[in-house]
Structures are given as structure tokens and as C-alpha cells.
Amino acid sequence: MQFPLPTGLAARLLGVTEPQLAEAVRRGHVRPEPPVIAGRRLWSPDHVRQAAAHLDCLTPEVERQLAEPG
Image 1 (tube, one colour):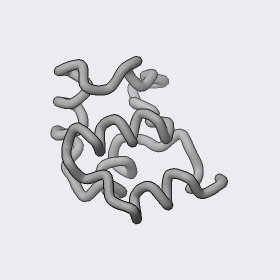
Image 2 (cartoon, rainbow, N blue to C red):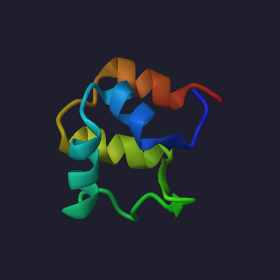
Image 3 (spheres, rainbow, N blue to C red):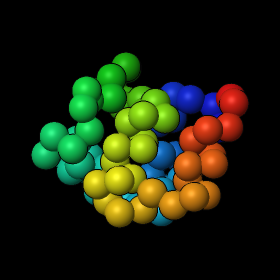
């Protein structure tokens, strides 16, 4: 998987909605916040992992995809 991911792809990877990811950032569960470039939040593997842990969707499959070289 190629990183960084836009929010839509990060949400699809985790099986959650974009608003759920945005809320995780807003409530401080993802630190530091993913950067916003040209109005789009860009998620690194660490950002996605933090959100997944908070949203209780950090599965072995998600871990595998996060570890794949891009």
C-alpha cells in the first residue's frame, strides 16, 4: 500500500466512515494530527494504526497492509 493515504482510502482500509476518522483526530486520539495538504488530510501508517486502535478495528489484516512496502 502506498502512503500517505487520503482520508477516504484510510477509512476504506479500516472499514469505517470518513467522519469517524475525523472525529478520532478531533478528539485527540491521533497524535500528531495527519497533515492537511491542499485541503486533504494525508494519513501515514502510524496515523492509521492509531485511529484503528481507537476505533477497535486494528486487525491482523490491517496490520499486514500497513506493513507492506509501498
